[in-house]
Image (cartoon, rainbow, N blue to C red; front, side, top):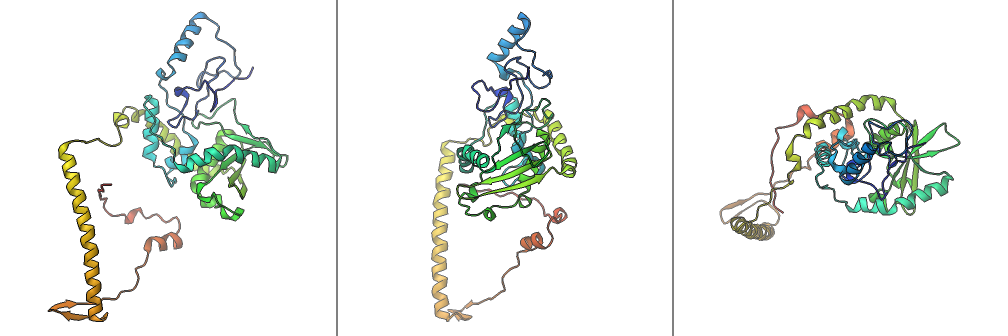
Amino acid sequence: MDHEFIKDGDSDVFDAICDGHGQVVLFYCRVCKEGEGSLAENCPGAPKTEGQKQTEAALDKAPAARKKLSKIAPGTIAAILGVSPSMKREQVVRDMVRAYHGAESEYKANVAAEYADECRTTAERVFEDKFKLNIWRNDPKKPHKLIGGHQLTIKSAKRDGMGLLYLRMPYGQRDAATPNDFKKIDDQPHHFAQMQFEMLAAGVTWGVFAQWAVVAQRYDVVELDQGFIDDNLPQLEAFYASLKEECKNKLHLEPLRKSIDNDKARKIIAEFDELSVAITNANARKAELMGELKKMSGESSSIICGRLMTRTDSPGSISYAAAVKKLLPGADLEAYRGEPSTKWTLT
């Protein structure tokens, strides 16, 4: 018989098989009570001995007691490879180490994530209706050793084998009116990276990059790029190997920010705020006074009460960063990076 894997949304989901965001990333059969590393090809059914029953009952009561690194969540792959626009590699390390130790997740859904969750079911139905295809959640008999998740798959009469459905509801394009309002996958390296490795995990060689908005949608067929996989899989493997050592770093279990709340700190904050207001008002008044002097001088360099009022005109500055990005895309600029610096702000 086939294994009956616990999936996202099931009532019996437990922490030990989830990542730091609460998504199921490890395969665990609710029938034979076996997980990755001990799964037989076919489900053997219920436990056979009384000893096994007692062991499994204890694990059911406290599944988090089994410390095991979760697999790499697909949504973190771009960050690990350094191409995510919104997540750092260090955050992935912290999240996975905290999940390993059973610490509270620090994930907080933003408006874009909430929007995607609300629209996902509708977007899936629109895809199925448009192409007359069914969507399946992929449950391979041999899950990928490194990448977790349950990928969405489709089957088309026009293609051999199953394909991946990589569905996105981009908040920034929620008002898209035409397919061209969405960016191509070539212009979104974070999505390209994640989609490639989701195809690898699902065991497919093609997929559809689907972007959905209420009015418009865009669907692009993407092929598995084995060269990309070969170039980047070692990075994921090295990252995962390094986590075993990082799990010993207790700093990941400490709060991100140290909390300070005492009379001395409150006094300093109050004075800081007063000075900030005074400086803002002073700069505003200084600009007003300079404006009056400009009027008196007729917008020309002058001598006012013995002080030199000098007008200086200069051409606009060149945005070298934008120029390099456009003229030399992909250029390695690390050799030109200056010394690191630290900046502090109080908000």
